[in-house]
Image (cartoon, rainbow, N blue to C red; front, side, top):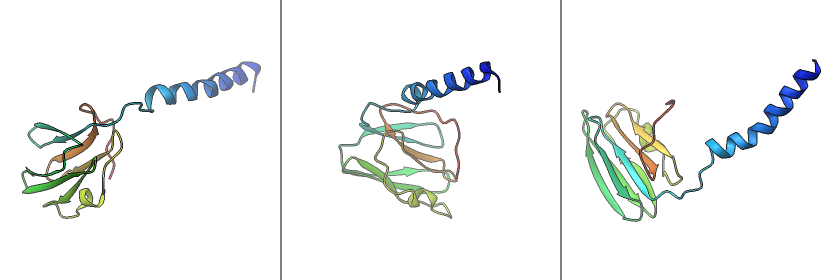
Length: 119
C-alpha cells in the first residue's frame, strides 16, 4: 500500500462515526403507529392510545393491538404468520408486515420509505 492508500483508509475510518450519527441514529421518540394497507391507505394512530384495530386486506382481516406504547399483529389470515412472530414493535423505525395481505405497521412520527425488505 502506498502513502495515499493509507490516507484514504484513515479518512474513511474517521468518516464512519459521522455517517452513522447522521444517517442511522434517531434522536426522536416515536409517537405514532403507521398502518399501511394494500390499497395505499395510511392510518396514523398515537402509540399512547391503547386499542385494537381490524384492518381488511385481500385475504381477510388483520388484527393489530396497540398497548403501552407498543404495537403488534395479534391475528392474520396469512399462512406463515411471520407478522405475528415479529412480536411487539416499540422502537422508532420498527416495522412488521403481512405481505400476503398487504398490511404493514411501523413505529415513528411519519411515513418511512423502505430501501429493502427481507424475510
